[in-house]
Length: 347
Image 1 (cartoon, one colour):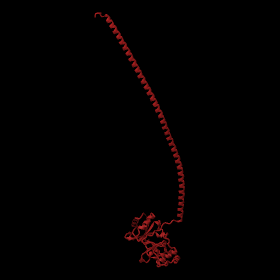
Image 2 (spheres, rainbow, N blue to C red):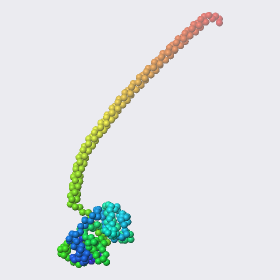
Image 3 (tube, rainbow, N blue to C red):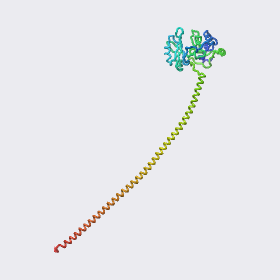
Image 4 (cartoon, one colour):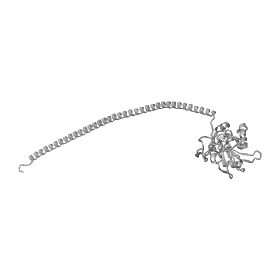
């Protein structure tokens, strides 16, 4: 084995009692009586992980909380675990006779996202002066699971002599010796992974929800329905677009025709007004010029008549004054003649 895999680890994806009792997952014989009991129970099918009536809720939204204090109550645990999300259900496991706490519990959250948050952040936190461990609900999520009371489980303490590997707290180490693939295949033990080792400081991802064939068919049907609805909606949208475009074209043609009529009417009305205004102005000019010429003619006629009257009156006055002057002269001559006749000769 290369030196870069000395500190590498891997985690169990399915449970086998003999593999869980091995430090590197390559043992083919049980090393203690508890592993032997768990192997017998697993091979005989004596344990049903789904037969517990107290186990309820969604396993993908449930976390396992271990190493709790025996003084921790449901209220204290609910308050501590509510920091990571909305707690839907909580079950603190107690002794069936005495009712005392067994030191572990199962907490179900509203969503899988909140469960993953608690799985990541609540691990190695402190509750009632005890450092707890948080793991996924392996009872219903890990195939072949055998609980600790039947010799299985994961983790454990060294002084008890029942160490179990492959879990979050105690993962498998990378094998340092050749892997006996034939023996593992004969016993049904899954071999160690090739090239999928992790660092000890990395958190393993909890199991994710797998879609069954029914869900896959339903999903495909829903996708087909969505595609059919999408196609139908696209066809409907195209029809709506064409109908809308035709309606818009008709409306635009009506609008433009009305606008053209209005513009033409405005144009013709403006032309008519201009022509009418030009005609009226020309007629007004003609009327004005005619009125002006007639008034000038009348003024000239009046002036000429006044002048003729004035001249005739002046001529009459001159003639009358001339006649009077003649008459005066004739009368004066007559008087002188008469006076010369009447005056004496010696004078």
